[in-house]
Image (cartoon, rainbow, N blue to C red):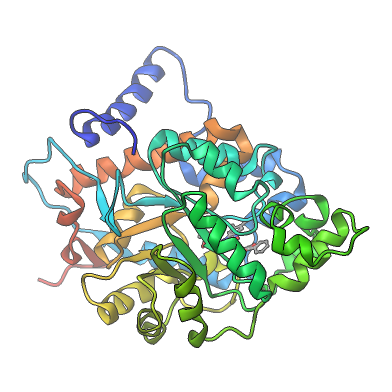
Length: 397
Ligand SMILES: Cc1cc2nc3c(=O)[nH]c(=O)nc-3n(C[C@H](O)[C@H](O)[C@H](O)COP(=O)(O)O)c2cc1C
Ligand SMILES: O=C(O)C(=O)c1ccccc1
């Protein structure tokens, strides 16, 4: 984790003070501190197909909008004079201490946003002291990303390939490369119906993005035709990457390949959360893939309390889909999450300014989160309890 002396919260409030002081001397931040405005800024610098790929949702965008509406429906009910001069954002997951309850979500093919792709993102995460979750579908190999992370923590997201030799080989490499957890995504038995991508007919892999973990894998390469170029590799990846036959009975096989903690990402029904744990998982990520898979689905935040209730207080429950501000993080934690994953906002930072842009997004989110703790009367994450949020509307007398 990042070196931090004194109260971590004080360090983050200091960031906000610095931004204001810089403003007084005429230096405005290069990127807006309103993270929700970065989407439009990124749109202006990205090729239309690249913007569509990152910002896109499934179908008519109903699930994507629902994710945001769910956050809007909850309001924070702050408490005063609780003594908040020292604030501690740290949490412990699977015995790993995190400086803050925030991870970078797995996002595929990041060289679509910036030539340095995942290397820029993981360096930013490492500088700020947050874990980076590497997508299976990355533009740099897991070993290169691990090297860029140095001693800072990284997790690996697994799309379980339908070729058993490739699946096991990937998992063994994940462990050798020092990843600290495996996040198995289950909401992708098929790619969602995404008009945004279909209408630009854009496929990142054909353009050299996103299959570095496979082209560097001996088991994958063994299945490639001898004279095949990059297109053949992309074609072979497409063949082995989809695995709609998976059921909960398969999870013990993955369990036998690794001692790392296994999280199941894409959980929405409380019964699936129970099945995940019963099949050998150690935690879940409540997520609808940022609204990119099933359109017309439930908001991730809306199902979070039921999943937490199903698993009890001690099982790690993470969430993503729609988190945009520090106060969103507080709402998610109050409704049952132990930590959140941030998706598109850091990709917009990456598109706008590479590693520095991702760092900007992460530092702003943490500063906002730290201030949200102070302003709600919370000294630590443990103080963020269910009674800190109420439905929007008049408070019952
Ligand atoms: C461009 C893009 C690519 C993604 N690729 C993956 C992926 O490879 N694996 C995965 O599990 N989730 C993937 N996701 C979903 C994210 O991990 C995360 O669930 C989602 O972005 C969270 O929602 P948010 O963008 O509203 O924060 C992707 C999301 C985006 C925007
Ligand atoms: O776009 C996505 O959301 C995603 O998960 C993905 C999966 C495989 C390849 C590219 C993107």
